[in-house]
Amino acid sequence: MKSILKMNKRGIMMLGDLYPAILTLVLIGIVLGLGIYILGEVDGKVDDAEASSAINETMVGLGDFSDWIAIIVIVIAAAIVLGVVFSAFGGGMGPPGV
Image (cartoon, rainbow, N blue to C red; front, side):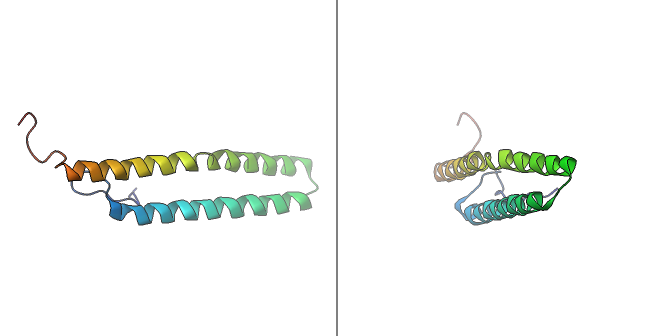
């Protein structure tokens, strides 16, 4: 599976990778929000207790996943900052110990 976020030749994320990362996170947030909203609307119309329970479990699962978005943003930002720092100082351009 190909990654949406591309890395340079040395495997370091750069500032140019910020736009696709942010766009991906925004799309994930929109899909999660719409999914939870639609499930909430459907749950109000369902009379079956088992189906209502399954919908509620799905909404709780999606809500738990959305808690991880902040951590994902921090990890992506840290990877980009480290990539900029490594590239500014030559980041492994020469052999070790030289």
